[in-house]
Image (cartoon, rainbow, N blue to C red; front, side, top):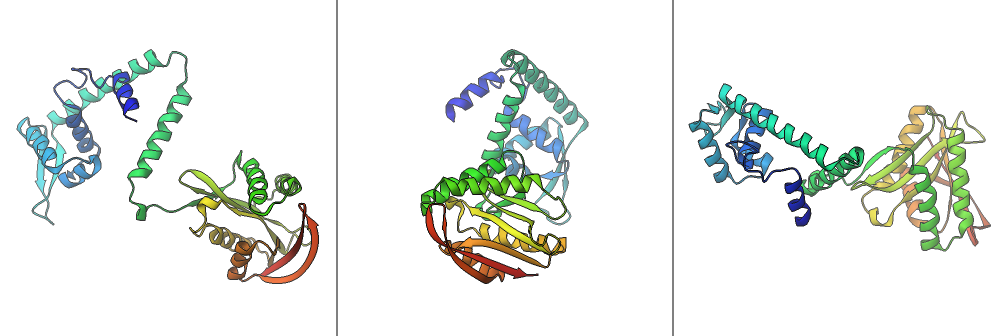
Length: 303
């Protein structure tokens, strides 16, 4: 990380003595924060930039002396004042912004002659996203998010089912082939109004999924829950429970009267989630499946 920081500072020219005119990099960032958040307080600026309050106070005092900012006392708290740029301050910020933009263009023209623009921007976005998440307090960060499927997700669903069930239960490749057929059938007959796939993400990684599809026997009144999966690394955060719940809510809104699902007795964690949601065990049968002798189960939820 330190090596990259040294390289990047050199590449974008932040070490050039006259890049920002008469301003240090910290002063330029403070000017930017004031420009971006007109009537911000010193506390807000320090928080946004993670600056020491004493250091910021000295910068603001210098700005005031150079008539770059004005202060207006807060009516709610006499200890705080709202800081804004003067006309001179806005002019100075405009000059800095122009110099920075010109330097950015020179950097792009010099270092990106092979035209890796999209790759470069994508890499920058990834770094920004990862480091931004790291700075958020854990209690304010949602443990996971759900989203609709997109290209690439369905291949992940097949691969992870095949890998995880082989590792955890010893099922062979026939189970992975069955999942592939289910996924293909879902795509071939996808009804956007009455069917849905949810993908769970945690820390920008795909960690779970579930499908709700028309039941082949009673498509107008019954839905089928399929392919519930949560990665081992993401268990314990309530992802499975939320995925099952989303199926119930969507099915009700779509006008279904029942949801059914097919599972195996050995899948204790999933069966527990179904029971919690209100599913009832309808029937059981022993069968040879995925290279094992297993007890298959059908469960139903009345909506």
